[in-house]
Image 1 (cartoon, helix red, strand yellow):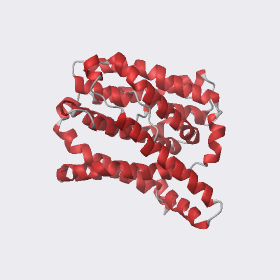
Image 2: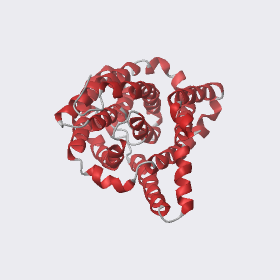
Image 3: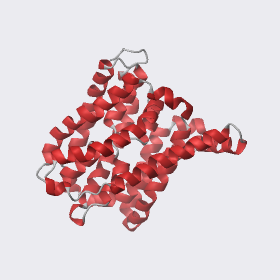
Image 4: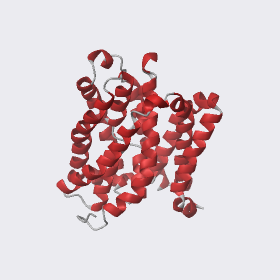
Length: 322
């Protein structure tokens, strides 16, 4: 069964997206309940993801200076420039602008690990870098927003949900995963938990996709005329980040798996983690949350393409590219 799930996981993920859309559009009253379920299912997914990588190897991964340097340069120097240029297309609308900036300025630290693993990228190194990426985006997001938006718009943003998301979605699952791995070496029940979570990886990602889409798809439908302005921005971003990620991989002499991971990190954004931040904004900016979720929908389709494309563009032998 596990082999079957892994073989067919991409079609299954698309089915999950479709199921979420059908539920959210046919029974829109369920959106609030699904929204409450986002954090629990995401925590379960990240717990399973963290369990899949031996945490004893994280120290070695963090010592990979070339990989970390490339990751930080791409996400916190190059991406902000790209985002600033693209965001000028919606600079006349505060909600659209803030939504685009919130989601595109924050590198993903959750399901990027799953999708990069499917593309045979160095997902263990991405996992090791996740806390650092999260901390830096928390520190730098206010800086970039202060540079890119009007001061009065910046003042309405509360970073408390961002900090809460970090503790809830990253620190907690990572700590529990580390404890489970420690106990698994000594107690068989803990090892059985690890085996179960490995088997549940694909279903958990499917559940997460279904819950997120079902919670927001009706709002996306309602605000579609406005959202049509941001969809091209998200598509262009996904396209542009492939050559930029490969360029960074070459500059920092990364091997093929590290370069793939760099491409995925640059392209995937922290939409599920910044969603609570968007939902905490004043009523006048309710569209921001929908802008963030729209990026999720575009990106997930893009990840299906990336999983197929990136291994063919960045070959297994270090330094070879098509």
